[in-house]
Image (cartoon, rainbow, N blue to C red; front, side, top):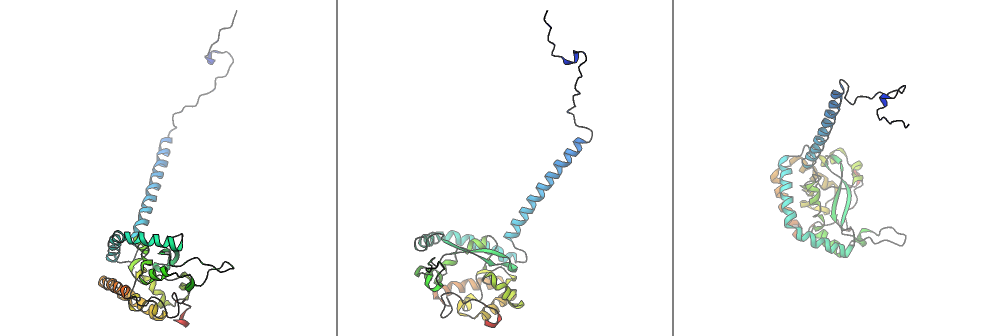
Length: 264
């Protein structure tokens, strides 16, 4: 006689029936879960707000006049559209003559000395000596590079920096990072405004000026900035580019390095 199978374990004598835990949340568990969800939503919302604030502060840097920034954005967008064929042709020529990459990027001090990466078209080759070190600037500067510098076409990619809020169309030129520790307190005030593609020093002598004269003109601009002064500087820049004045210091392919007050 066969035993009959019974799937209901509770009917088996002497066998313990395991206690089945209820899947229903305990009292207060709903509240704690809701609190966690709410905290997550608050954290995500705060993070989004922080990111939005960061983007806004990048587009409109603090202590920079709104009219100046709006003018920069408007003119830069128009220039990028109008000059896009020129940018394309220059990029192709640089690629053919100088190779890749087409753009030269370097860390420079911006507003209040904060570093950013500036972009330019390459004007030099990567020619090196037998020991692998780069040759002097005057040797690596190609005929194409000389033309790009004389016409200021090498500066056009800096329009990207203007869009990103790292530069302005007009302002003191961004120099090298190592110069920050060489400035005296008065010279350091040139970083109280965004650096510019062109500036008051550029339309009053450019690289033909001494460092001391450049810095005095930069500080004058910082102290006397106005919307109409920027308009005047932009028109003077176009005139100076056509005249090709002050492209380099006498006897130097590029600007002589600033070593501090003793050589300013």
